Image (cartoon, rainbow, N blue to C red; front, side, top):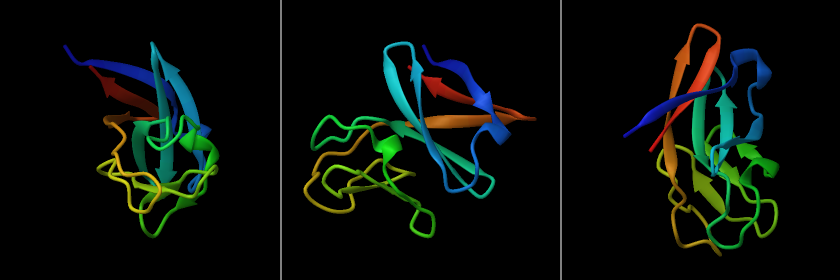
Length: 105
């Protein structure tokens, strides 16, 4: 059953910033682009490395793995460049007033 978990306040993340949050056993990378928030699994599917440590490509809505340069679509989790070929999970984000939450299963 899905669970909505509050992870931060809206202003805890600046536009263009990514940050890792642990939600139970899940590592989630929360990314802010403008007033939009995206949540994806924080483990690069090519090699277990934190995506939150990578660069956010705001215009493309992608995040780059800092280890080998793979990029992932923040909306779908699909890899957009090699060496990654497997998508990462995405999570719905709920913004309620100043609270930002993710929906996990």
